[in-house]
Image 1: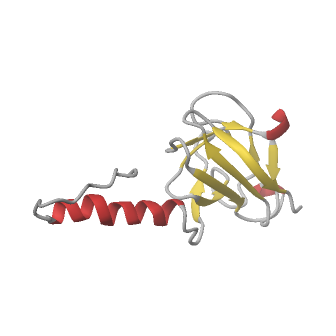
Image 2: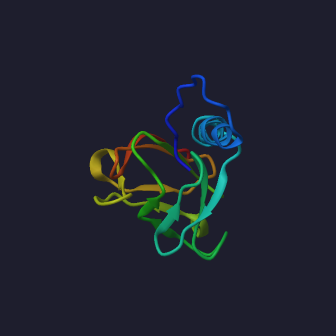
Length: 142
């Protein structure tokens, strides 16, 4: 669900459909994309995850302890959306490498270097430019 342009209220009758579209859905959008609630876990599948909120933990394909994995793409973004990713756990068996690339919904990392998340306190933050996720900042706490 994306943002819906607000309706200009005039003498029109207010309907449930209007309330749902222009109030409830927009509040849910803001809550999912600005108010950072608890991180939602995403598990890598063939190098890809799909964003559902702004804040996510990333788990290697196969689950916790399955080995190191690489994240190439995060689907589900649109221009201006923020994405914060964190490691699920610490350790070599749960290391997630965020890969630098170019293309639809890939990551553009500062300096062009991959970012290895191998500690539960590692974070990386992006903004979507309409095509790719561009790095804003990172925190390497390993």
